[in-house]
Length: 385
Ligand code: ACO
Image 1 (cartoon, rainbow, N blue to C red):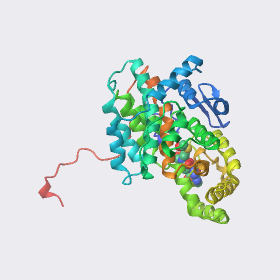
Image 2 (cartoon, rainbow, N blue to C red):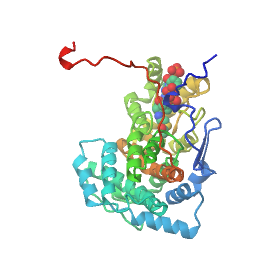
Image 3 (cartoon, rainbow, N blue to C red):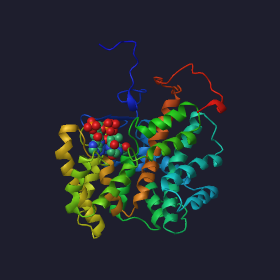
Image 4 (tube, protein in one colour):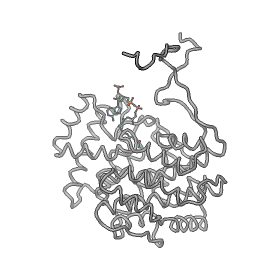
């Protein structure tokens, strides 16, 4: 029997509850996801991204006047300071877009007069400002890395249309819009995942909201979290020919490699977001782009094999990031912008959690079990071996 005095370590905080929250429920056994109580399928089908932002920030659906108001405010806040555009230009071609986003976003705090105002009204205004501007930064990064000039936001367009307009210099087709709008909504929030936890750790010190979201962006980058979407597409590129899919996966699993875009700490069944994204694969499988057709076939064959091998036996199923690559490519979004777009979208969840956490703040300060030595004799440097 375990000694009750022995502290138990939970690596990766697995199974640890850090707080109560009414923002999002992830039911990992049933494969269900709710934003403020609404099933994700209904949210995705009916809401705009602006409506999802209102819902997650305020805890209820907006009425018409409130939706108009947040839509106009988000449009008004889209513009970027020249200094931030300069940072993007300076880092263009030298850094991964996630690194450029992290730096450019962090610099935004210099231009916000309310940065240290911790009133709940100012914090809500900052949340909306942040949500608006992160998308503009990502669009600017994508635009400049194609060697094309920065396009100023168009305040007459909705959030997602404006994002694609700033990125591509034209309005999206209906399919492009639907794909990117759904990805923005599906990535908007997902309870206390690594990047939201990272955001909250920074926020819990009463650092400002820009510092907290910068921590979120930094944490999202890794391939075990938000970076999995780009990594999954890279793997599909290495597979190259759909007929190589099964052998590639078998070899990777035999070599104890993880297949990016599969598995989840909470979902032990099919990720409900991945189901929605997968529906788009069926819409693009006959795309006029050979690249999109190839990636789509690889994704569907890899999914089948992985589910046969590890689905029921190990609870490893596709997560949202596995199918993101082919559908983003079909929408004209390059691979290194997948995770930055994820960040733009998740800025809603991060700021909603910060607002909620600050209502009853307590600094995060967990413990560790020290396994080193104590009371060593200090040796002067000229006496050390
Ligand atoms: N491919 C193959 N095997 C896997 C995978 C995978 N993608 N994911 C987990 N496993 C196996 C592990 O090798 C391990 O096997 P073992 O018990 O034989 O050692 C077992 O499943 C448990 O895996 P852990 O890594 O301990 O599970 P954890 O809960 O810590 O990790 C995580 C979850 C990080 C998502 C993991 O499944 C993973 O690395 N997946 C690939 C990266 C990915 O897709 N991340 C995106 C997640 S969704 C998101 O963040 C938006």
